[in-house]
Length: 117
Image: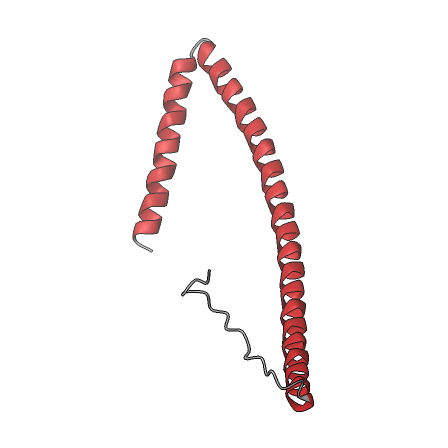
């Protein structure tokens, strides 16, 4: 049973025997197709190697970012521990108010600088 949407069309067979000219033409066509396939395979191999190199490079960058984030989170955790300890000490509320106002002024100055740049 043959499907109508099947793209392959078989060659017409000549019952009178083999024709060397058509056989040579088919052989040349096969060689040309094999050469084109070889070129495409080479291009795909090169592309695959480039993708592998890019993946290794990106992985190295991501590992570096991960290490930086770990260090930053440790630094931030230590800072927050100090801030909480400062707030618990006597007179810590007044110092926290000063620190909050200082941060607010710094952000306001940054905002004004960026707005009128």
